[in-house]
Length: 440
Image 1 (cartoon, rainbow, N blue to C red):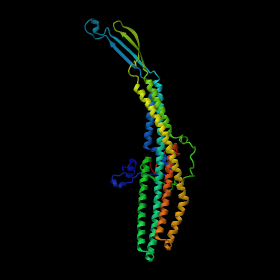
Image 2 (image 1 turned 180 degrees about the vertical axis):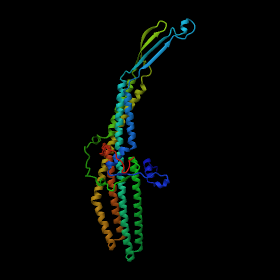
Image 3 (image 1 turned 135 degrees about the horizontal axis):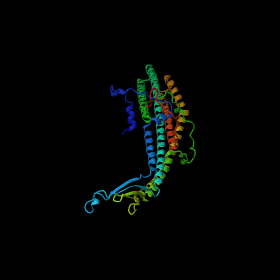
Image 4 (image 1 turned 60 degrees about the vertical axis):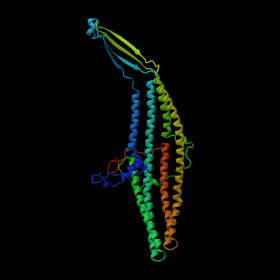
């Protein structure tokens, strides 16, 4: 299966610099992440994706500037009746020269200029909503990646604790074998369990490195590291309960995607108005000054011209614009349904993740810890079998891992719900820099 660009960059980022020889650049001071808000702020400060979205919005703003400009006047000139041959002698020189100099101005009719301005304004609204959507998507991706990195780090602790318990069980198994109370096979099995736990702990540590590299790519900095304490990860709050208000569309009132669907319809309708205005011919008026060389007299010339729309009445442009309006309306109908379905599904999964984390934390984990403690103590006294100890320890480690994964899923789903609703984590206006160096 092909790796994504971000994933490939993350994998390459964890390769030691020594692999590139003596010319490798010195390590850059990492950006220390203290909270999701700080990580989102850093991403919004330096993210290349947001800079690209900002440039796209500026391009549309430039279109709005251009739409307000009127047609330029034309400077015209013509020279007649000079340099001829045959006939009258005076026509062969410049004595009968007639020179005409003047200006011509095209006057737009049919409301073309106002239609252009309106279309540019509607396009600007769409670009602004796209920019907001990029900001929200960056925030969602960063919060999700940060939760993944913190979960990976905590899973390292879970696997190390699993390895510690396996080492204690191995010591107890060897003691019982030496005392002749258990066969040698039990000690061998305990050794296999300990070695497997060590491998799992090492693999979990590598996942931490990769997840941190993923986070650095999303933020747009060379390296990141997590502060020792990430208290926010354990805060899942009260039971989300039933979403309020009950109408999903009302809960999507702040969604830029929902607003963009309506803005896209208005944009295409403005384009239809412009195409209809384009079908109206423009009038060009002119005013000239003509000088007659043979009599040194001067006269004024005025004129006007207008195309006759016998063939081209912009039929194709109008038909295309009408089709684009229909398509935008159809996409809006489908988009609303998709947004509502996505939001409802994410909210249901969020509630399930909260219940899973709450149940594991309040009920399952204390029971698993007590069972593992009793089984480990009882094994040394001969009250429990080796398999019972392994089952208790495995249940404890699995419960701890499930709790971490449930909390990670809760944060990822909450970030998705906030993204759909148009909520952005609160950030300060100041840019975030890495300690001992720039975040760039």
